[in-house]
Structure formats: C-alpha cells, structure tokens
Length: 209
Image (cartoon, rainbow, N blue to C red; front, side, top):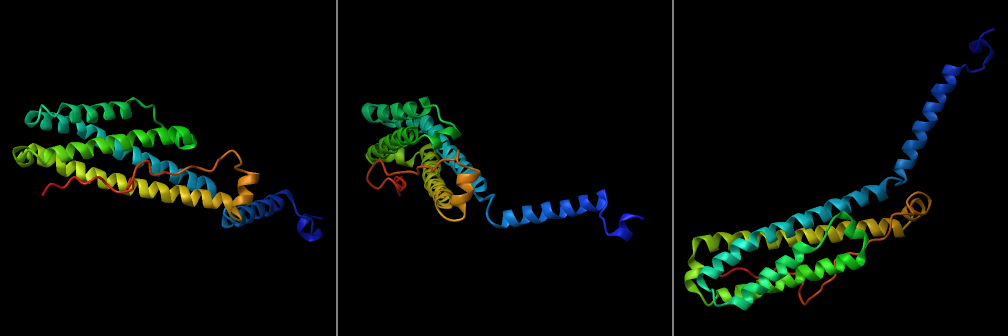
C-alpha cells in the first residue's frame, strides 16, 4: 500500500514541507528585523565613503587655489603656508573604512579637517584685500567649486550622522538589541562626528560677492 493510501508522507512530500517551513521561518525572521543591523551598518559605510569623497574633492581644489592666490598675494606667505601644511597633514593620514570603528582615529581625522577648514577661512579673509584677485576668472571658478564642496561636505556629514544614529538605535532598542546579542555581537556601537571648533557644523563662508 502506497504512502497516499496509508497517510504516510514520502520523501518528496517531506522535502516540500521542510522547504515550506524554512521559507516561513525566513520570512518571519526577516519581518522581525534580523537583517536590520547589517543593513544599517552598510548604510553607515556608504555614508562615510561619501564624506571621504567630499573631503578629498576639497583637498584636490586647494593646490590651484593657493597657486592662484599666491600670484596676487605672494607676501601673504604665512596664511598660504598654513593652508598648504593643513592639507598635507590631512593627506598624510591613513584613512579607510575601518576608521569609523576607531573613535580616537576618527577624532584625529576630524581635528585635521577642522584645522584645514580654519586655514581656508583665514585665506578667504586675506582675499578680501585684493580686488584684482577677487575679479580673476580662475579664482571665481575655484571659489564656486569650493563653496559647492563645503556645502556637499555639510550634507555628507549630516547623512553620516543620521546613518550612525539609526544603526546605534537599532542595536540599543528592541528587537535589534536581541539580534545584536545573538548574531551581531562583534559589531560595535559607533561614534559620530563631534564639533572640534565653534560652529564646526557650518560650512565656511566663501562668498565674496
């Protein structure tokens, strides 16, 4: 007598039931947020990459900016050197995605970027003394690019802060706290940006109009 008549499931039926149960289990777990922590972690990494991209874009603009200003204000050597040295310090730092797991290195990186922002702000004050420089087309183009970059840095930093806040909140609250203790205990809480100078959250003023 076959399995259909006796009511005994055969191997094919058992496999179908097992597949169905696994599918229901996976669906149920995904609805409980089991994947939230790694998903939010990837969002943090992506947001940090964008911060790095915008900081690098600023660093790439600086040599031409310094060169252009020097052509009109070569005797402003101290201010020009401060910008160049601050940029060199930033570029000398070994920065990768792992820095967001190291609060001390992240703070050092932010301090170096803040120093560069301050040096650029002082340079912009110097530019006010030179009407011919302010009218130079190359300088105007650099000014526009720098202003846009500073705004992008502010947006990228804001998005990174939001991504870190969401990731940390997931780890600290139910049910994410349970999943973190069971499956993702190796993924730490992350530090976010902290102001290293007064009004650090604001983009430097670079509008000379």
